[in-house]
Image (cartoon, rainbow, N blue to C red; front, side, top):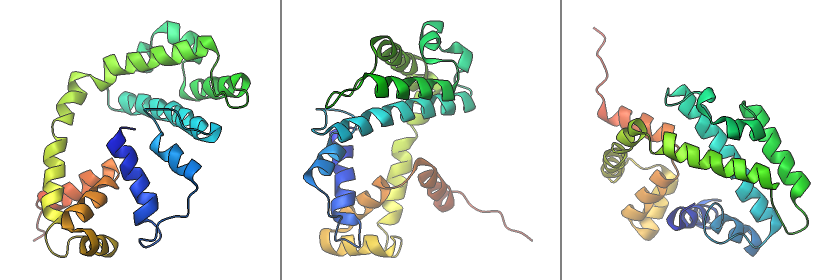
Length: 204
C-alpha cells in the first residue's frame, strides 16, 4: 500500500466510519493499517500476518483475473515456481499458508526459504508478464479520464450521497469527492462511469 493509499485507509476508519465519529482503534491496529503492504513492517505480529496474508490473496486473485482476461494461462507460470507452490490456485494458497504457519515463531512471521523464493519469483513473473503487459498498460491509460469524469460529475450539486455531503460541509466538496471515489471498488467506478456517460437506448 503506497503512503497515500495507507493514509486514505486510515482516514476511512478514523474519520468516515460510524457517521463521522470514526472507530475506536488501538494504536497497534492503526499501525497495521498504515504499514499494510509497503514501507516498514507493522510493529505487531498480527499486523505483519495480515500484510503477508493479503499479499498471498492479492497475487492469486490477480492470477485469476489475468487468466479470465486472456492475458495469461496457468500453464505459463514457470515450472520452477509451480514445482514448489503448485499449479492450481487452491494448492498455491495451501502451500503458502502452511509454510507461514510452520515457519513463523513468536514475533517472526516468515515462509520457508524455498517457498519464499518461489513466491518472490511469482511476483517477478506477474510484474513482467501481467502488470506490465501491453494490454494491461493500454487499459490503465483510460483510468485518469474515468476518475476525472467521476470527479467532475460528483462535484455537481446533489450527486454525492448524504454521508459525503456532511464531509463536504465540514471539509469542502473536493475532500468529500476524493473520499467517495477513493472508497469505490473498480467495478462500481466503471458502472457509475457508464451510467453517467453512456446514453441509454429508448424503447419505442
